[in-house]
Length: 452
Ligand SMILES: Cc1cc2nc3c(=O)[nH]c(=O)nc-3n(C[C@H](O)[C@H](O)[C@H](O)COP(=O)(O)OP(=O)(O)OC[C@H]3O[C@@H](n4cnc5c(N)ncnc54)[C@H](O)[C@@H]3O)c2cc1C
Image (tube, rainbow, N blue to C red):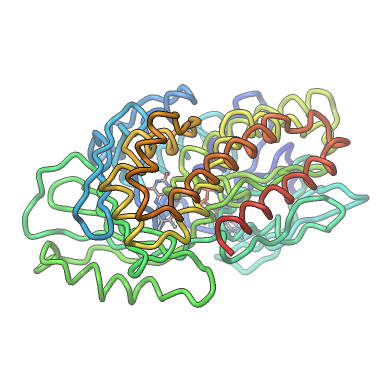
């Protein structure tokens, strides 16, 4: 049986950063990935990454084959296409990636630091002894052979599938399952258009009939290639995203004569982070821990951040020779401080958007009940206040849409409450029970006021 300090399940963006961070500190790290090495990085994704995420992690800008295009901002179209918000700020400057090469670039960083890769190896389940994870059962997909790997800490970075998280015992205090309505079902294609479009903007189209609780995107890639797709919230009887795509998106004249290069469907968990992401000998990262921006679904940045923060915490825990939940707890706190608080606030904003009528959205965008500045602030997690004079103007403009305006007020209020609560994330596991009860009460209230 092979023994390691750390076993990282999944060599995606979260897993590679965790492996890099722990291997760099001299730990013996094993990266277990079901894909073949050369396929690592390949993923159904929008391929867009904000530059600030790389800066925060001290990672250099992509510039080799992994970079397809530099992006200057985003354009958001109202449902009736009459209003266009152009959002251009530091937070929205970024890159369109070649996803496979970007994944290979991150993988190389982990391997260069000494991590061992077991590719074509599927992790089956965690091994749990005396309440601690002590390794994983896996299967070599080339030979069919079952193997047991021992590790002092197991990291679940297996993405939406969350192969470890789903099999943890209840006593660990980590949610095994998440609600369908907190997930977006997506379908996307990479297409070669007949002609290159001159744009450096990612385009987003809001339309509740086509994409209930989600949106359609058209992102420019290199040359005449585009990444085009849509996501729908898996709430109630939601439509099939691929059917919506073929019926409402591909019929756009822009795609006439275009060539399909790659197509596929996948899921994006767009909610607040898991309330707790650690147990004895285990940490949950990236999509497996629902670390995605709830508004636009971007998760590459937060997943890498979680890889770095969890990695750093694991190094400290192993230095102290203690891998208990208590010892790994700082990862929760660090993530909540850096991104989780913002994410939780945006989860409330998502609830507003989920039930918005197209007419309200179009009206709200046209008459500035919602401004570009609000979207900007919402997107970057800043507080946005309804100023008195501004609010008075908005009330006037909102007379015909008073229900929407009230919901907007409620949303801003609930976002503030949620963020204040997250700023008090417990320092130790002992405080978690009370904190979680309050979290659940706040989200129940937000749901009742904004969705039901
Ligand atoms: C359609 C779509 C569009 C998106 N667009 C964007 C975007 O434009 N920008 C952005 O920032 N984010 C986007 N996201 C979100 C982003 O892709 C994810 O948040 C991010 O990739 C999460 O990284 P991860 O490392 O947690 O998981 P993943 O990237 O999913 O990596 C998980 C890895 O684990 C491996 N694995 C799974 N099960 C096992 C197992 N049993 N054993 C071994 N290995 C296993 C997988 O093969 C994979 O390599 C999008 C998501 C979707 C679905």
